[in-house]
Amino acid sequence: MQNLLALTSRELKSFWYSPVAYVVGALFLLLQGYVFGLLITALNDPAADVSISIAQAFFGPTFFYSISILITAPFLTMRTFSEEKRTGSIELLLTAPVTDMQVVLSKFLGAWLAYVILWGLTVVYFIGLRQLTAFDWGPVLTGYLGAWMLGAVLIAIGVLASSLTRNQVVAAILSFVTLLLLFSLGIFEWFIRDPETSKTIRYLSLLEHLNDFSKGILDTRPMVLYTTLTAICLFLTGRVINSPRWRS
Image (cartoon, rainbow, N blue to C red; front, side):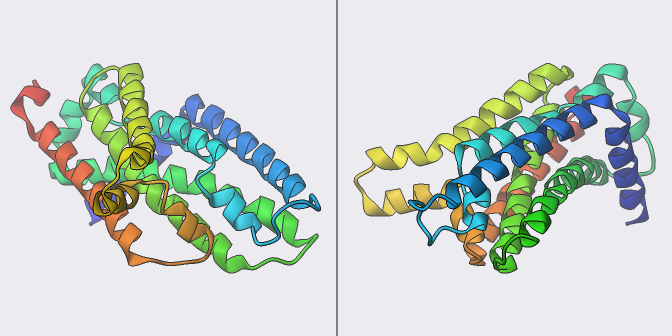
């Protein structure tokens, strides 16, 4: 556990030493702030649906939400393994008295904690809104939980993509394309006539479950899905870096 904490701290610190972190973070917060302002304006429209809360609008699977995480996750993870393999520093890490899984988990946790921090900073928008009007904090908190759990899946996929190449750009593109395909999975539901198959596709759709989180509903099924997909990606990453061919 001590080795894992030390490695995770190293990864998190190295992330903030990079100028890319501040560029990505600034763009993420600017986009989320802009979207938050648009949503407030739209919800204040007399013709707006009064049943829709700010949490549903902000944390729901909207176009802006999808774009922000589609861009952020690959940028956070593209350097995790590819850069170390390109520079050769991965050899020092893998020959240290740590296990391969500790290395994988530290890479994942470092990037995921950075993702959590970026989303956590957006709470200032809700604090500012609270000064103007009252709202239920419950859906907001579950909305953040959903964003962080979904983020774990996205980061795990990005780490896996980074372990497959020594080129950062290729890792980012591979991660982006994979996430885009997963986000598009719900489209196939329109072409499926079998109710059971349609139900399965809806369950596997990563973005679909955000609706429940944004309404304050805590369902164990999406939690199990997100946790399972994260674990599978991390397991595959461990197998990749454990390969003698990868080490050569």
